[in-house]
Amino acid sequence: MMELDNLYQEVILDHYKRPQHKKLNEAFDAQVHHVNPSCGDEITLNLRLDGDRVTDISWDGVGCSISQASVSILTDLLIGKDLIQVTQISDAFMHLMQSKGTEKGDEAILEDAVALAGVSQYPARIKCALLGWMAFKDASTQALAKQ
Amino acid sequence: MAFNAALIAKDFPILDRKIRDGKRLIYLDSGATSQKPQVVIDAETNFYRLHNAAVHRGAHQLAEEATDAYEGARTIVADFLNAEVDEVIFTKGATESLNLVAYAMGNALAGNRFHLKTGDSIVVTEMEHHANLLPWQELAARTGATLKWFEVTAEGRLDLSSINSVIDDNTKVVALTHQSNVLGTINPLEAIAKRAHEVGAVVVLDACQSVPHMPVDVKALNIDFLAFSGHKALGPTGVGIFWGRSNLLADLPPFLTGGSMIENVTMTSATWAPAPRKFEAGVPNMAQAVGLGTAITYLTSIGMQAIYDHEIALTSYLLDGLSRLEDVHVVGPLTTENRGGAISFTVGEIHPHDLGQYLDSLGIAVRTGHHCAWPLTRKLGVPATTRASLYLYNTERDLDSLLDGIEGAKEYFGA
Image 1 (tube, one colour):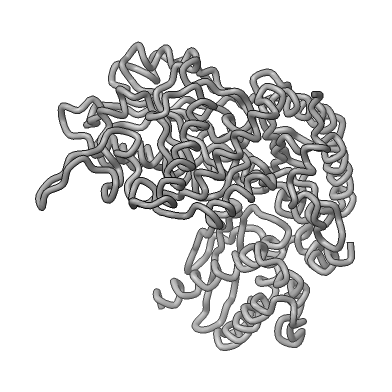
Image 2 (cartoon, chains in turn cyan, red; image 1 turned 180 degrees about the horizontal axis):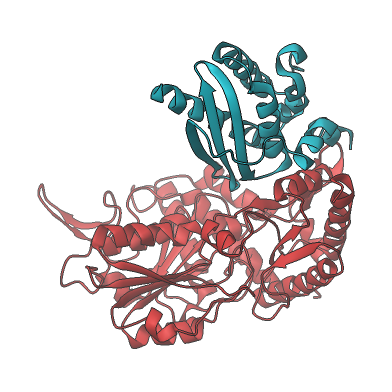
């Protein structure tokens, strides 16, 4: 099971069982709904911005442990950050997902998200990990457009 | 000779390979695509090695051999389905077959029996694969016809209680699956075909999950059109079958136009060759058609009834095993009555993707997700399921591994 443990790190299973900010906050600047058409995973994500600072991310959805844990980790990581930091973190995460298992990720930037490094070895699962990140990106574009 | 799945499996080279660091491959995803016996791989290769030329063209020996091989495959398919040779059309797969008939109907002008207009209806079911739903949604949108459907009960059967209002005098087409790729349900065609014909509608059967697994006689089924994919029936990818009654194929306009499907062409108009060529524009997937012919010969030599009996025995074994596991819920009929070997299930709170990943680490290949039947999984209230789909090369040993794997996953994910 060594190879599988690399994918299902304890941190991921923890976030899956105890997801963070998984309760839609009715106050939001943008709400998006994203699906993964290949597996049916769905997420609704609400975002609140104060100027260029992320003040709240809340979400609800159904999906596998990877997709659910990834959103949960995202909320912990991005709430309170300004959009320059958000871009730096998102870029680092995208880079990690595309690394095909060759990189571990910079824990100083990605914190718990480095636990998802193993996902990059399973091409079919990368979309699972990116579902929430794509939803967030969409929401932030929409929220900024309203400002 | 007694049916021996373990011996049959030796005909399939891929079943010998190792998965994920030396695990035996346990292939339970034949509903998505079947594995290929060596004879099929050889037939496709030999076509390219020895006989390759464009069929129905060319005044040379290779063209003759290629045409003989291709048309020979058509005869094999026709015999297999109890159809006439000219009723068998090669396509690139069932998806193309179903789009062919839907687009061809959309091409029918007023006066043609297949012409659809506002007020007409097309009937499907809630358990259709997207390939037998979307072409009809699109046809309805293009013609103004209404799309109607039979609902699915909690037991995974079609609800035919309102058959006379679902299929009514306005119905022109009834398109449905023979066996659900998610539930395994085998649908009661007799009642549906009888009602459809009463109102003058044609019956289009998606036979992707039935033709590879059981004897199918198009005449006995009392249907009008049928589609299946070669790659789910031990054949190569890139080839499928569209079958239609010859009198209907005569009236059905073409879908794709171009080379070899014509009778006469001028700068401004054309007339069509009779079926099957009317529906086979362009140089076809010849090597794949020949490979499919070989696959069907292989299946026939084992016997479709024997294959069906084997799969039913395995299905019964698996349903029984699953029923004894805690937190396992089978989505679909719980007995083998009118059901085949596509068995979908959920395991507690474990998401199918996670379960599938765990099983993969043991060498077990299953399908997870909505199985291209999203409206069905939504209706049944399960965002996704895990599916084991069986074939002639599977054994009870494979299913024991699956059952053990499910127990292992429950422990691993703490469910």
